[in-house]
Image 1 (tube, rainbow, N blue to C red):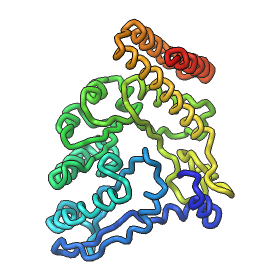
Image 2: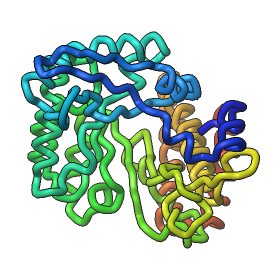
Image 3: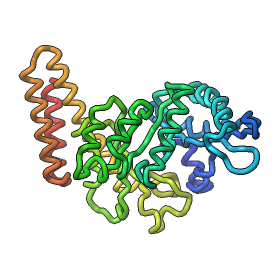
Image 4: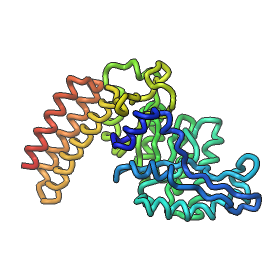
Length: 327
């Protein structure tokens, strides 16, 4: 959450748990597939109004509920209702400033688990949605068990791919990450290691950000910023990175480490862009020199396992380098 007045007031008066009671839009349909109850957008818009221009939101795949009984995804009634719902949802998001580039459906979590059944469901859902509107984007977070063959089969219907750091990106077998780097999808990295609350050093967070830079990925994710309504000061909040304070969310040292790592990525991008400009201007020698130094710094950080003292020195070098090449 951003530290805005509305959020501060809500946390101060009612606690962070109340934030999570706010609902995403739900559409209700009858047995014939006709939508009979349309959502009130107020609570959903509460979220949208607090997003920054660069934010991308991931929506749960199944926002349809039948009037009676449990939802049956991909039934005839469900498909008919979904086809009626989708253009309404797309338009509302667009009216709030969220074009196709700022949101995606999140059909399943960590495909590769459950003996491949989640991969099959991901493909089934993605092909159905793309058949209705090919501009709607689909997100997925591959885990162990998802093969290159699976990725190849899905490459035409999945737009954002966020593989896990340790089981895919840094797996001993590199075939999956090698393949992903050849596709035109948007690529992020995520990790959800347990026990991170006990970590003192920020290397767990920096490793992922610098690795994303090294392989050309443009996003990172950690489980989790804040996804629970119970007291975040309790030991059970093992993954959570912010806590409820008297005046609003309180960031942890780990959350601050992520901010620093993202700033490192921005510094690397700044000098990389300087190299691009030099090459475009015909100064290949300067461009080569900058790119060689960037590669050297990334290798130094990696070799040190992102030791804070080593990374601090590299950070100063990047700042000096940016001033030098831009001057």
